[in-house]
Image 1 (cartoon, helix red, strand yellow):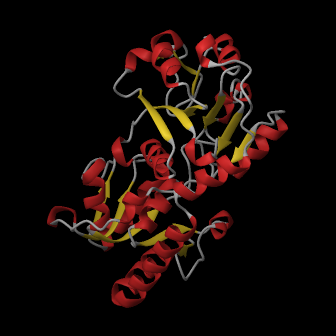
Image 2 (cartoon, one colour):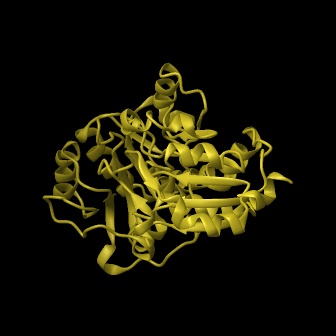
Length: 332
């Protein structure tokens, strides 16, 4: 069995639609040639048991084994992969199924969700986190099955979409409202033709965009502003950076050191120090569109060369140890 021919039962929820990160990971697995059984919990909510009312990536959120036992057993996976959402099996189910295959859990909302998911992710054979800080947290908590896997994008994000008039802008914010984003967003709307896409904004907003509308919105703007602070107050390299970079948009982000591991400031992405600096730099690049395009395309090139899910997942499955099952699925 080669790593390019794994049979993977993929369990996830597409809360952000077809352009969301969970679907993007599924697409990356497809691009690597794995045989996939897709268990889409967004369409099969009866499979979910959530006694603690967890949401936003917190867990545990249990998947009811008895409802999927037949299809999993027929499929005979090498890997069962829980993709985010705090998803897992009940502990007794987990221990039994680990005799038949390797069970992996992806966490995509760290460090914010670490306080809740640390209680169960150690039960997976392998677990991933999107955050270097959280990686250290897991180690300190004695959880030694965790791997660092940064965000990425699938190949769809590189396909150009025709701009549409209602979404056209000089600069856009594509993200949901958080109080720490308000003053910068106000300044952008006061100074530029700025569109905001997301939930909950107390400012003029186009509302959230998903699927094809997301692509239309992104390809209808010249520049994108990223806010690296998470809901819990951590600074992170978020998936939106890679999504925007893949489209060739010029990206502005508040400066932080972790970003330098992925993109070069000034050549592939633009850093700002505060609102005044952000306004100044956007104004400069609006007046110098050739410079803006060159940096945006350089970021796109880096994204294609280094930051796709196809590459991330291939590396992950090459590095992790998939165990030899103790039992065959026919014995289940």
